[in-house]
Length: 98
Ligand code: HEC
Image (cartoon, rainbow, N blue to C red):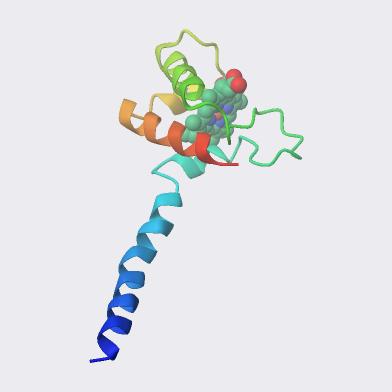
């Protein structure tokens, strides 16, 4: 039964592999932010970069856009489309990006 440990090793890789990839996938909605917000530091876009920003800052801004306390041209409408849980997940993911 020399093949059993090898099979177990392969099975372990097969099971843990996709989870590692999934952990780095953006949560629903997060990928849409980069349609306007710069992702690289070399960008000349006037829309502020969100990658690597503090998650609390992003969440606070999203709440402000949603309740109208922060002036906005488009973010008020975008922020209204997300629940608290979704905003938290998006903010955490954006903060973890380099
Ligand atoms: C259609 C373009 C567009 C998209 C898509 C977009 N944003 Fe914005 N965002 C803006 C603009 C423009 C501003 C400046 C405020 C305004 O005019 O609405 C802004 C401002 C912000 C700010 C405040 C940044 C600061 O430093 O003041 C945050 C936080 C933010 N957006 C988060 C997000 C998140 C999270 C998403 C994805 C769910 C997103 N935005 C998607 C255009 C966009």
